[in-house]
Image 1 (cartoon, rainbow, N blue to C red):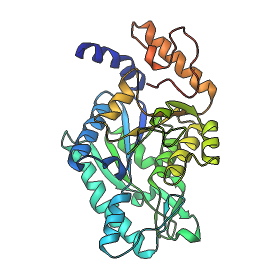
Image 2: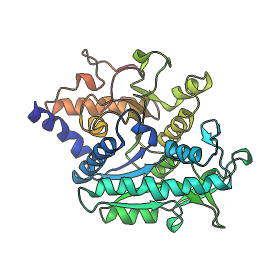
Image 3: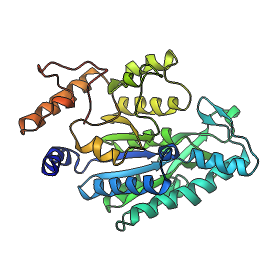
Length: 323
């Protein structure tokens, strides 16, 4: 079985070698497990990706950690459409948590395995330029520009960028920016092969309370309907809209995965079945996925579970799996 697993991974290693994959690691991905174990497993996956020739970029949030520090300081967290209302004190708290706590933890976990990770924030070198999103939200920013020179330089020298999502405007004013949004914009700017969100759910559901309604693969247009009818709401809105914009802007695939599953990145990237929810731009992209699984089958691999029905017909957009 171990040998079969290695053989199964081979075509995916070939396909993704040299490709950029942006991974958003959220604080909620730690829910339900010990922080040390979750972070150590995540770091192993990222290093494995790097060692087989991929170019991983880590973008992290820290929502639960920010909320925890706010509570200790006597401040109440308030959200509008999944975005944290951020006054001057709160943006300072966010900066302290993201740059001073979460970022060094992720960098250190990765660097247990070698000299790979470099921690940066959006303020460094003007990496993330931002402007105020809405006066109701205070110092919450929208991304106006990504300075890819910094990231390209790190990637070309085989480092793994680990990015804290604090940005700034031309005057130096800092903004707290939703990490899901930043991950999507960075994936677009780098022309990434994949954009991956790790969170505390197994993926998107067509019926929120029905675990059996997990959406394994879908298109950006179909997600518009799930947002419109309220199926996708709250904190999932920035994540899903970032997926939609990314795939519509050239990122080949976006994925929403359960970060509580051990080695979930490797299961998604290097196995036929895949895991979680895959989002692509349109039906043509789904057809392309099917063609790729058939190509893998020609190498003698079993890809029945990778999206092709046993009679060889095209799978429905909702249902099936991704690699």
